[in-house]
Image 1 (cartoon, helix red, strand yellow):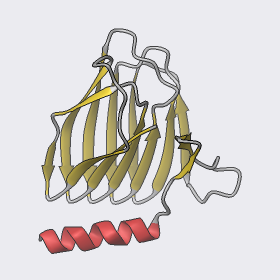
Image 2 (cartoon, rainbow, N blue to C red):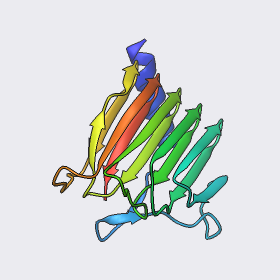
Image 3 (cartoon, one colour):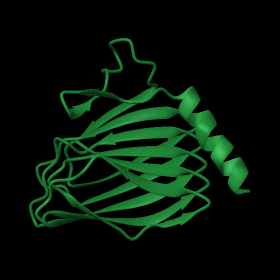
Length: 154
């Protein structure tokens, strides 16, 4: 089963191209400028739900008071950019529901991430280093099954 999950993750990484980085900050091509992303969404709310199934999607969070996000991703890929979001009360929650898919969370380097999510036959990994002084804090909760979540500090 672990081998099947590993081969699935490798297959998804081959099918879906990696993100682009410019000057150490988060960057992705806008869907209308040559990217093959099917689902593009931008939110400014403090609480929201992002969902994708059997496709790839790019989500941008531009909230001045980010509090709570639910991320549902099954049999697909989702990239969520939090680099234009602000946490006002010192803490926010990201509720993960990732099954047979992959999610990339682009988090500002100044945020601390506390991982309380369950990963069954999947993984949650971090890339780059954060430069947090302990606040604000983002708590990851929820479940990752037969998939992967990558936290990329930018």
